[in-house]
Length: 371
Image (cartoon, rainbow, N blue to C red; front, top):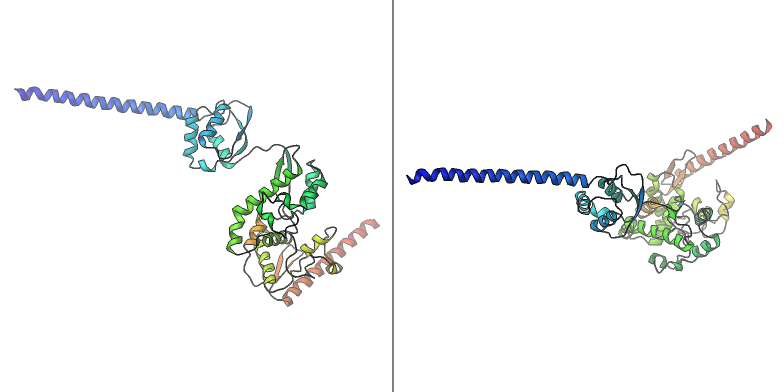
């Protein structure tokens, strides 16, 4: 009799446990669903219809929590914890870049995070673009034209690298007597009233950043001299037309140096002339100047322009070939040679085509005058 009474009790107990588990699963499922809904809602824009923008400064070294606190204070996100979770879910939290950003309440968390990771920094102030291969006078002209300081002050700073050598140790080389080569070509934004020294400081900082991150390792690996590499990069910058041939051009010049041959670069000679010419003439080859590498051995004493990253990389990683000469044809193509005889054929052809072009231009001008 006792056995018969026990079985129903066990069944009831199992049913209760089963029901309790079902209820727990349902509660957990509902809670998870509510949590997921809240998470998605908290990741959305604070006000999708807002057209107002807010400028936010993200300090260097800010953590996701710090950024979330800044954005929450500006009322740009709904929930700090959810934003931090969104950042961590991207697996790119360490790539968030410091700087000044323009955000809006109409942006959701993903849009804000994407902007932070891409470093789409808000740029205000005076915009100045320094093209690759600009010489110092062109850099100063561009700055003065934008109302950023006086020419005389820039010239003094340019000729006195020691003004910056405490901060930028690469300027301590005794051969460096000007800032030519280090005024990095880039698009800059300066606040009105920025001093001349602050402007140059920004350019030097950009050079140091690019050099250390992309060029330095190759220079050290190939056992090259820092300043010589910058000088070579400036030559490549002025000689090269196509990006794909920068490293080959660098290789040609290094080959000539190895064989104790003079570089005979028209681009370097141009640096010594009062004004840049469309064509270097035979009489120019006799000009006495350390930049006349038809008369002097080795590299010029300073860079002859401010090279960009592509030319710096080419100078640090020259292509290994047997070429010792090259001529840029009137078609814009470079013609490389291993022997002087082969080079002379290309050079004579280039001069002939150039003469014909100039003759045609003069004839056209003459005809227009006669009309």
